[in-house]
Length: 112
Length: 118
Image (cartoon, rainbow over all chains, first blue to last red; front, side):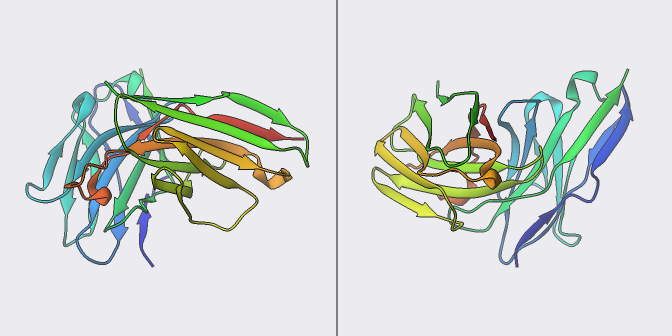
């Protein structure tokens, strides 16, 4: 079965430090991978996507993600965290069609 | 620019009552439309998707139904709500131009409806 896993329920980081939110996938074929962010009582906002090509993908608000095929990972990163980055982050994947598989989400806390 | 609207933002309904949640998209034509349920602020479950007027695909058998009476309108309904229907319901759209593979298109979400069943 295809799946997207986010192994950490919560990530804590100090403001100004680099952050990483982990994602691994298990899908057949070549995956299309996405990261979304959700603020309280809001819908998900698209951050970035990987389709093919360069393994380092740059997205909105200074976020980037690294696709690693051998490790089947797609970790979200940011060089310097802001308090305003505190939110719920979702990794998602799709290999074709209309059904995108979402991870369970990782809550990011950035402390001032 | 494209926008997506969902209403109401919150809804409290008694068990056994009907439901109608609406979603409309502006600024794009013939979008793919989706209904998700998010439980306890965590993972998303795809309920329905639609590629055109009157075309609905159901992902999970349940107490809910969906309809698309107009190109940019998507409605989630139930005839009789159950306690288990409580949750946060999200509508989303993605681009569906002929040359675009739907699976590599990002989805754009509304701000959701929080449904509580008493």
